[in-house]
Image 1 (cartoon, one colour):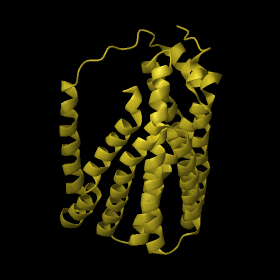
Image 2 (cartoon, one colour):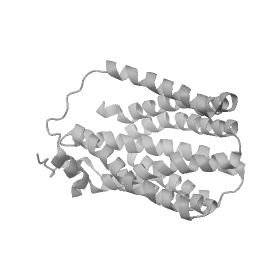
Image 3 (tube, one colour):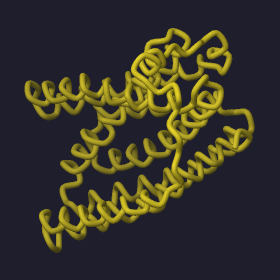
Image 4 (spheres, one colour):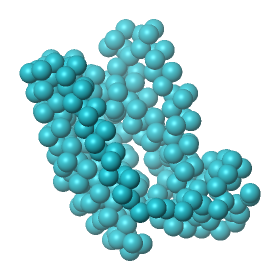
Length: 268
């Protein structure tokens, strides 16, 4: 619904965070009680069962323009460059957030149970913020929210290379989840508004996914090489500094407007 995109996106993120809230803690508890192997087996069964409802979704028709040339055009067109840059930043910052930062927290807190509790606390804090930010986005403050959330989240990433005390690290994890929740709702609201305005919403959304995965093909090997050649503490510090720089790419999204599509025509 074009008039309620922010709160719909916020509600979606909030429901997801609330559903996931207990998962890290329960995962840590299961690993402690039955070990990694049995926990992975249980997780695999749950993932398989979670796929089954997808077979009952309403069928969607593919875009008639779907093809290689128009897909590449949506990635390379100069009219979409600002949002493509923000997408590049998102795709790779989230890799540091999902892979490197949790490892760092685990080494600091020292136990599976504490690690799960920290992640759960971050998810709960993010869940509360997402729905509230959705209302701000619908009230015409989407770009302002995107701007301050980007600045705050980048500052949190930039502070992490200098952290040493466990309590402060846990605090920045919760604060980071709050800032990231606000950023994701504002940025996703912008995403869906642009999809509405694009010549073909299906192509626009598919091109985003292709862009994310293509950029990660080149970015993840960089993390692997850094992990190989740098001492552990220097690797963590370098990764967090890179994530701070990537977060700044979200500022480009505020330079993207629906009017950017005005002169864009899709080639088949």
